[in-house]
Length: 473
Ligand SMILES: [Zn+2]
Ligand SMILES: [Zn+2]
Image 1 (cartoon, rainbow, N blue to C red):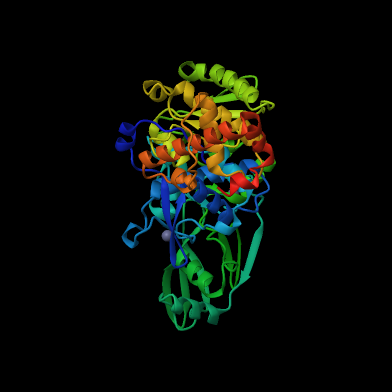
Image 2: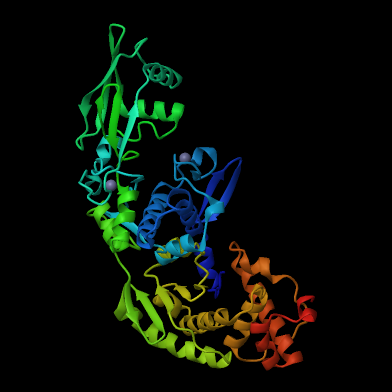
């Protein structure tokens, strides 16, 4: 759920864009907020991880990849396809656990020299990662080949049938002798994987790239034949370890690292050494400042520290106003600039803050102060946090927003009986003016209800849900 306070229209005009991605799913193009896309990649690529820390590491890798390669399919009218060509996504497979892994790392990416890093990943590196240069001609220091003691090498074995090989290579339009009598590795990559093979038979010797050979077999017979280029050939038997290209984060190793108690930061540092984890290219990282019930996440504790005290005070006041317990474990993230706020939340620049459950995301303090909106924003979001901890299921968005606006304003608003359907207008993110009108209308509707039923009764609806005669309006 999104909760928002609106900033001035001047900001809206300057910052119209927001982070969402167009993704081709089957015959349709769907628009997804960045964080939903990240959760969908987790569902498609690593939904079966045991370790939450490994899931978080993958969330950072998937997010960085998305921001770096956005627009990859621009010529076809969308950003990404939904297959492993880009990142494999499963919208139906998104679970609360995967959403939490995305939310816990929201906005965090890996950076190298001020730009998002190329955070590729592989199913299983087989004990040694591959060099980026061997697969993509990309010689980044953070993609250098290195030993991986975490993916206890499981061996695979495939026995070649010469006729199958000839048939598969032909289907993929690769050159092949009429009959294959022997296959040998004639060139290795720096990590010891096969780079070039020689296929001998019928008096001929034909060279093919090992990856083209593997893809041809995979396409023809499935991906559990020759699973990686990390093998030895004892003709006609292929014996190897690993699965996939081997570059970057090894999913099997990452899951083991997480299960062994390593954090997602350590996992990312191990697989992308030298790339910086942060929410901006300047390498800023979150620092946690703990209060009584609220934890502040900031990149500049000395600048943002005052927010913590303000939030503690407003949280207590909100709890009192709603006759509720102030929840614990509230998190406030104050972003260092508009870009990082928008990358993380997918909200346009005219949205000052957003609350998901007990997690609040806020624009930079200086930005809110310059609009005179710091106190009102924190008050508004703390009211949301308390209300969300109490709210009956199905309490409509117009009532949640309207009540918070009403309570935050504190005074009497103009009474109106027109409730309309403010929900869709509040949720849209293209027009600041329209959204503002929807919020004002929701607040006025709630003020009308208070005038008619009394505040205590209206507040009791937070827990009990709206009575039928109000719902019907
Ligand atoms: Zn693609
Ligand atoms: Zn590995």
